[in-house]
Length: 266
Image (cartoon, rainbow, N blue to C red):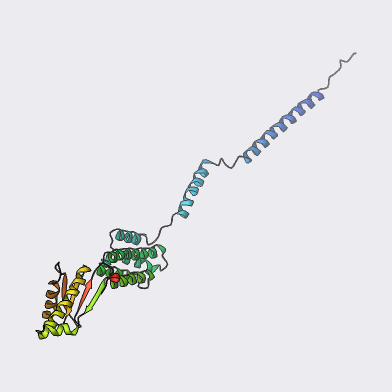
């Protein structure tokens, strides 16, 4: 009996097992690669929910750090409004000075408030200078007094006050009337020489007043003496004298004018 050769299937089983192992290995590799890929997802693509949170933090952070709210901003606004209306120290209740001082009470080093006080002083000094140049010395002095309310120790105010003093001295001359002139008037002397002396003196004085285009203040012992002096001076000028009468001693004529008399002869 001839046996038909039997082909063992072991090689086929090995092939099947090999295919199975190969498939399993490939599957494992794919899963591994997928897992690695998920772990390697770029950080620039976070989930939608995280993205919105991160964006919110990014936007709010800089704004909170960059914006500084001055706790005195309300008073600063009121002070600025008062400055624009030129309510520097008056009326006191709603003046820029009052608002700035309220800030400095709680914060003595507040830079904006201190700068505001300097602004007030500078404005008064500007007005004082204009008044000085216009020979309005009373107004200039008023501006300096108000500036001194802000800072009485300011060197700028002291300098402007000195300028005012020098300007007033330049624009004022005082003539002390001689005793013999007043005696002549009181005693009504009839001497021709005395009359000529009185007339010459008053005429020269009147011409000086007119050459300076001055306003005069007559200080006299009494009202009658002052009126007599004014009549005598006015009679010796081309234009009517501008003057006022005051009771004071010694009797004198005070001349106020704009020109500097330093080059004029007495």
